[in-house]
Image 1 (cartoon, rainbow, N blue to C red):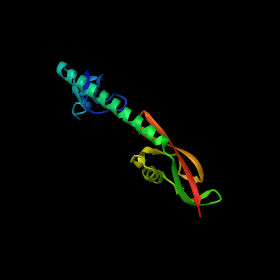
Image 2: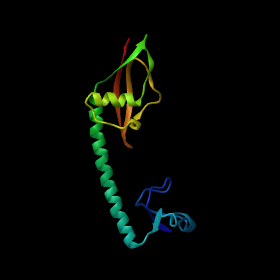
Image 3: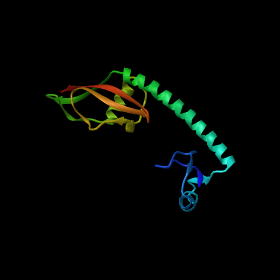
Image 4: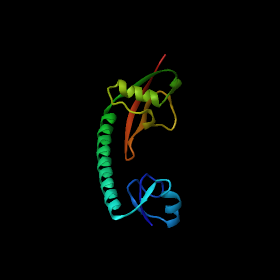
Length: 148
């Protein structure tokens, strides 16, 4: 059965996609839960318009994220933290990096966008990745300076 998805569905497609699914899966699961509608000619045209607008929005968001990545990579981020012999008392976490970016005149970003395997616990230069879009990643150079 051909259906048009009304919401993103992992392993099946995104909202507005026309997919072929088993009749039972469509009748017993997708249609009753409102996650899909049967694909008629009018619905297919609406789905095409929905996909076109989604693609245009994604292109616009990807472009603005790329511009933001250039700005972030040009920033010089410096964080001062209490340290002794190159080791910090505590650590530098995502929220510290977000605050340092804002203080350096950069854009405000969400804490969850900063990707770190673990918190920074040593002084020196560190590279931190910031995911601005599903396809755009910026690398921010952070200099952690120890103060006593």
